Image (cartoon, rainbow over all chains, first blue to last red; front, side, top):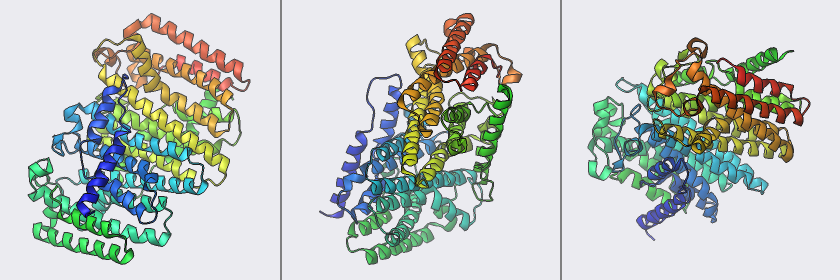
Length: 296
Length: 296
């Protein structure tokens, strides 16, 4: 199976797992549940759950054991997108070629759908921990859940900084700190969680973390590049918004050419780390290249 | 110590515990942390953490063991207030006599402060579970955390129904379901959590749950009454808003007199349950009466 096929297989797997958590039953809050499902199943690269499962698979074969964690991190990611799109934050009408949650439903629903997805992720994983009798496995799951909570905490802080500095000059230190948190934290978290759940050693975890940090940064730089020169149709959202809003991005700060060089270099570093580290890591090598080369 | 003194003592205790979790350090997201602290320490009855600690104390004396859970439930409650006050939901300018979070800061900050408080509550408790070596205690904490996640899930659903039915006629079944979830769930949760953490038996827990359901309903009816005829100055927010907005409340549905009769009856039921149940429950008896008689 080549990379593209394997990637599609993972995406399908995640989508079908996510389906299981969309409540369809008749109840007074049915439309809230529908709106959560709308955003959760609106497509997307599923990068975070894939990173988690693939990292887990470096150590153990029973990948189904981390499906609930994979679902949870995608729910968290979806919550963050719904809230970022709100009129009070980015005020975006489209995401992945579809109306954003508050445009499809309304603002109150979008706020509450986001809240409910964040909380729902915890609910699923705490329930799972409660049902785990093996004491070693239970400890790992608790450690993994702490990593999730830490990653979310950092992601929210990063998003806050992004809103505070809109239209203001920002130092390169701040820009880096913002992205490490806003995007990096929830790309690092699934890698760490996959490794922790599989019982990886400290040493392995720190190598994988370095890889995750690099691809997290690469992901953000690429995002900034696509926001500037991407194809609106492929992206499913308008381009050029960042500059208009006075957002500080790698492109607005360093210019397009320098941003592309940075992307190239950081991707090479990620590939180097993961290649040297583990011979079964071809998929993670390809994934780093995919992040660099994607058009959406 | 009489009830009022004991209540003040608990409020002081909670406030000083909450203080410990307000981050004051210099960092790029400092203002986000400040805004979380602003809402967390804006006063309030601290009903939920007090219910938790007092319930715990029916079974065990080492109440400091549930302080983190008490802090967490107040953080969750504060998150829910910040989001409810947002322009996209209730659009309230004042809460407890102070500007609401989005009025004091801005909408983006308020959305993210709410998100961060919800997530922060989990982060504290998961960290605590990870640091608990006693296996029985650990299990109880996991069970308690699940109750919290369930309560939050129900609270959000109830809040959603409240927004969906604004300006519409609502059946008494729906009104009850809405309040059981919106207010009731996070009043029942701390009582259950206190009992679970203290290692109470199933039988005890279900008696306490019945009490909590009654005071949760009484709390909501009283809220509806105060929203109609309370003193704006004492309440720290305008009155009469519910009716203007076409909100369906116990007062708008049943009229003031009937709502007051319902409040009286449900409080008597709560008092009966808790009196018969435990001879050390004077504080919980007084608390039910306090909920009925409060002016704010």
